[in-house]
Image (tube, rainbow, N blue to C red; front, side, top):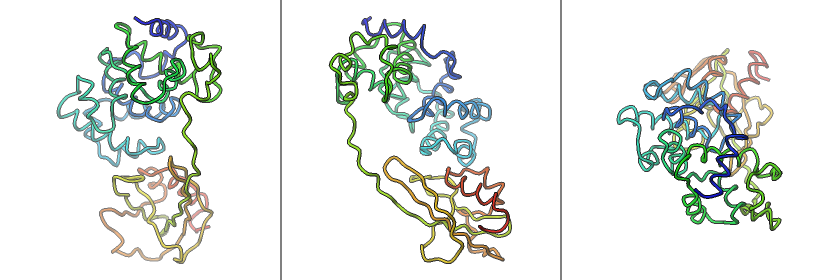
Length: 326
């Protein structure tokens, strides 16, 4: 076993995280669920969602039997909604074929991929598999002064210990999440600080190399909020795509008539979206508007549907304003 691996395993036993709700189990369903939720999302955000999912869907069979609408309703607010759709699709595959035993088969599941599959293989089956998520890339890049995806994968695989793979994998995750952070790393608490190349050469901020920041493009959209009494019209967004499978307000042209509300701002990875709500009260619901992809819902029911965060904020605003538009 390398000194790096043995040092991290010893550090994890004393200083790592041991009270996360998905720890202490070999259940591949629970581990897979947590790893998918943790993709690009912090632990503190994931924990309540993970617990709610397990309460409603305690097994992969119950998750597979659920409707996509119900799954996305429970996922709403966690972001990156393709993960929720992929989670449901993968659950149906697993329920029919059984849980994959090999890392490659796991990586072939919708929404999993190489690093997530390795984490599942390590934690559920004790297999020697290298992970390389954002936290681990940062730890390895700084400690060994290595850049580039291919070189980091080679390094990650070379460092794998023959025993203690679960503790080692958890140590890498914990070190990146709690000590070797992107900003203001706690080098004084790092178990490998003495051999860290980035620290030795005062290059911590350079590893991994920061991506050049480009100004995010601004996009604008008008949402038509059709109201009939206490009901609003929502339509399901097509998948794949932004908010695919979720219920949103229909889009409208800028010059349509209605009461204009304060815009909402929402940020995505590659652009920012400014939403202009346009409220129109109607006395009679046109039947032609009703279709399989559109539905009239009471405001209270709409708040409990599978909706993205900006729709939820707008519904909350409408609820506060009462029966009449602002």
